[in-house]
Length: 219
Image 1 (cartoon, rainbow, N blue to C red):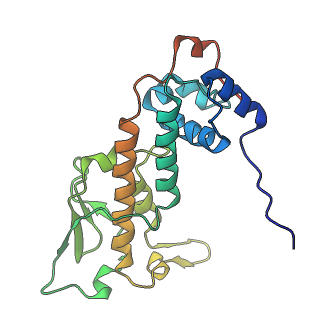
Image 2 (cartoon, helix red, strand yellow; image 1 turned 120 degrees about the vertical axis):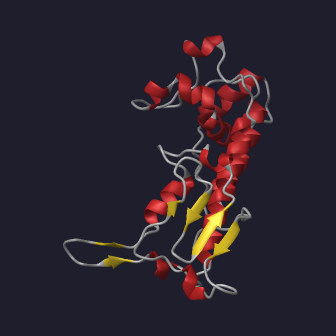
C-alpha cells in the first residue's frame, strides 16, 4: 500500500497570484481556501454579485484585509464541517406532562415540527409533549439556499410516506437515543448563531473599485 497523496484544490498559479498581490510569502494554499470561504459568506460580496453568482464561476476579489477573511473562513469551515459534534446552544425544554419526560416523549410524531409563532420563531414545537423555547433571533439570520439550517432540519426530519411504494421514512430511527434529536437541534442553532456572529464581524470593505475590472478566477 502506498502513502496518501494530497491533492490541493488551490493551484500554484493562485498561490503565486495571492502572494504577489499581498506581497506576503507566508500565505499558504490552505489560507487561500479559507479566504475564499470567508469571502463567499461576505454579505456585501453576495449582494454586489448576486446575478453573476447565479450563472457563472465567482470571481474572487483581493480584499484589503486578506488575513481577516482567511481567519473567519477557517472558523466557518470548522464550524460547518463539525456541526454534528459542535457545542449545543442552550434552549429551554418545555414538557407538557408531569415529572421528567421519558425517552418516548422525544420521538417525532406524524405532525411535522413547527414554530408556535411564524413571525418570531422563538419556540419550536417538536411534538405534542416537547417544546423548545429560547431560539435567538440570530439563528434566523444565517441562511443557506433560501432557508436557515433549522428550517432545513425541520423539513428533513419529519415522518413521510412514499405514495407509490408505501415506504415510510421515519427519522426516529436515525437516533440511538430519542433525546439525541434535541441535541441535534441545539447544535444546528449553535452553528447558525456562531455563523451569524462571524459573518457579521467580517470587515466591511470587501470589494475595491478595481474589483469591478479585475479579481482572481483560477480556471
